[in-house]
Image 1: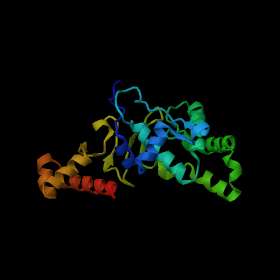
Image 2 (image 1 turned 30 degrees about the vertical axis):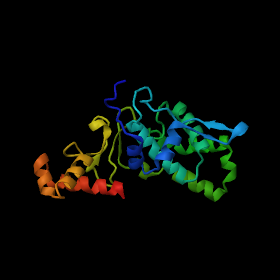
Image 3 (image 1 turned 180 degrees about the vertical axis):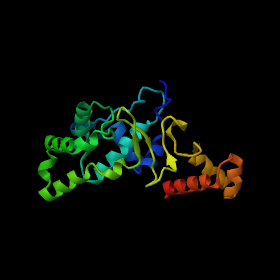
Length: 227
């Protein structure tokens, strides 16, 4: 399988970028078992990665962005069962392998989740006030902030720093790893170089022939990721 243009992240990398625990991420994308004995039940993955056919244990750029949405839905208290139903329905309705990050989900997401919650029985467990809150928040503008879409309405790149385009994740650049936008150099490489050079930003800037500002951007991003 050709991985160029798809992005490639290890489970720990994707978990760090999406702000989730690796164990949770594996449950979402690898499936899991619950119960014991005759009550043992297998829960399938929420979706199959577009690089699942490749001989690598990793995730794609679109997997990463979809994970961000699953995290937001879970923080609203939406069950994995409802999220799975919503994903299945949305893939069919929107004709998209990755429906949550499809541009059309911004307008159709609330309806899709309402139907999924009815189908799972979760809607009956919510009082009116809580239900209105969930549906108001289920497609938050902040989830789409920083995502640029291509002509096919699929996410093309992601600027992860709030109100800034200084760092970008683009599956066509460095396998989708975070890079300083103006230089296309990976933030982790510049950050590691800064540590190796006794935290001398000017020296690293000269080594890589980039502005000091690029080094400062990489440092700020990597330290935020580690926090």
